[in-house]
Image (cartoon, rainbow, N blue to C red):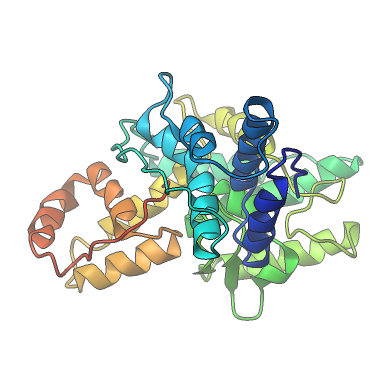
Length: 318
């Protein structure tokens, strides 16, 4: 956990411990609190209590920020203020977040050939005597197949702890995420034997380990490991640009596309997909309809009934 050094550090630390005890302290969340702590130390070095000015100057949207970036930066501080107000430790008003914007980025639409090429390249990593390369050879094929088959975020896969992977029932306990909502993901039938085989193989290298996908140092993999491996493997047989995170988009769109030719309870399926992907609101999942033209009309029809998709309070990054 980060060390906070401003004069209001005990308040921030108390909130961080609370988040950690609730398994809600993500890496991004903790970093934002650390930056807020530094902001207070530099600009308000003599303040021993949280003030409205401290919060407002930090939460004010910057000229270089779009709304969504500002939301991601200030949400942890909003949570801090809410936590302190509920416990009678501050009278500072909770700042208002800017309105969430629809993203303009259009992710790559994978073709069946591209995906076959990619996973073929994953399986062609050569053998090596180096411990790091041995781990890479057995990890990469399973890691990226897990992203493809489950739709979990890359950070969720990287931070999976051994005790959070139930290889008996095939369930993942996602505790460390980009957001703060713990959720569960059921493995695809094809993934359970792969994950079990991987677990046996990696135990030969790490008889005792904390993370399901351990780095050769024993820690978890960093974000650049995912990007570096995806790009190098993807480019072996494919020429168009794509990213590892787009496997998550592909998961959502493929699931939605499978609904087009069957009779289904729309709101129930949408809710199941939303919960599986770790969204705290159905609105975040509805974003994927913009990538699935066939379903756009269905969404419009169902959205006319306010009882189908209830209004929610909190926004969350996709």
